[in-house]
Image (spheres, rainbow, N blue to C red):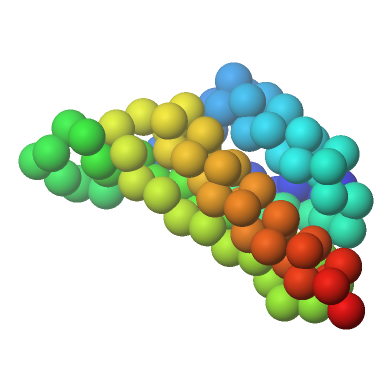
Length: 100
């Protein structure tokens, strides 16, 4: 799988990239139709410390693109939530394909 990382108003972090890559590889092992992923890290100015670290992930695969975006207090928490949401979307697509 080809993973592209983009940062908007955030400094690049090898640790974050490794964390997200590990999570995406787990998804790829479970759902083999994933070809690539675009991961965007953004920082939002917010007075609430519970939000502001945004991660957006777009998965490239045959058919419609799967996308998820979350804003939480840390990039790690945002990444974990995004991966959970992507897993749910992938599971729904797999069930839909298997029912036909």
